[in-house]
Length: 294
Image 1 (cartoon, one colour):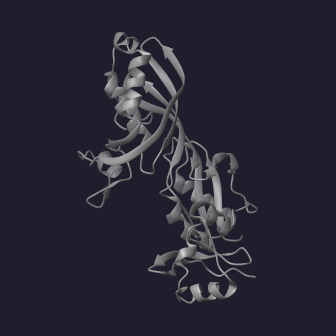
Image 2 (cartoon, one colour):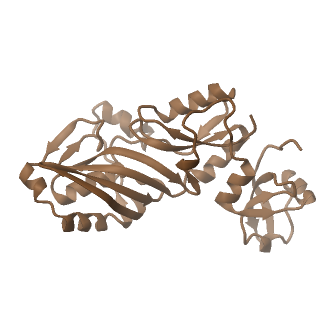
Image 3 (cartoon, one colour):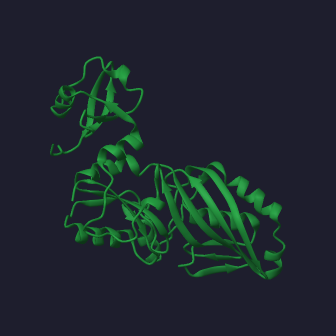
């Protein structure tokens, strides 16, 4: 199995670690990592790095993402999703009184650059401990708001029943945005509470779930490191001699003006040498990839 990036469509009920464990068994390698977890309830795109391509995950994890989700208004839970315990119910009258205009106003306030308090049951560390571990032990967790960007928050469908209704939405957002928190905050703004009942990640940067496999097998096709790095960082073409210099830690003197296209150093054979950075007027390797066979 060559090094590369594997796109997986995670099913519901599995943890991201479960997917990685299955991939390790199927591909016969321990060196597999992922670029951002999904909750067990969630489905959709996981980006796995295989062997040397795990070095590319650090450049993928911070990319913008797209989610399809269902928000249920009228009920709050302690995890802000359907896996938690109910913490509050709005009256049927209060829910039925929520108007389309009120929903639009609430969503508009949660679009753009916003300050968001992550869900208490999250992987964020508090004094070295995961917030979800502390919450499950009954510890009162207070998380600091963080700045995130929601560039798209569109309602695709409204399914209303007496006393509750669901919103099917699509969200484009920056890395670190909690869709559960959007559901919680929209419900709070409307005065009826809200939580997430379904979540599917459909995109991470240039990678789409439409290109993902639903099951990892030993003959799974990985995306070549050069293709991935070019898509994420842009290509920086180097000569064969420059590739050797970069691998040996040497600077490319006076080459900084060529960095306009990207920072993924690609040699004449189309192989990824590494990721480079500007040093004054020169170019230096910031991360080298393991050398591929010719």
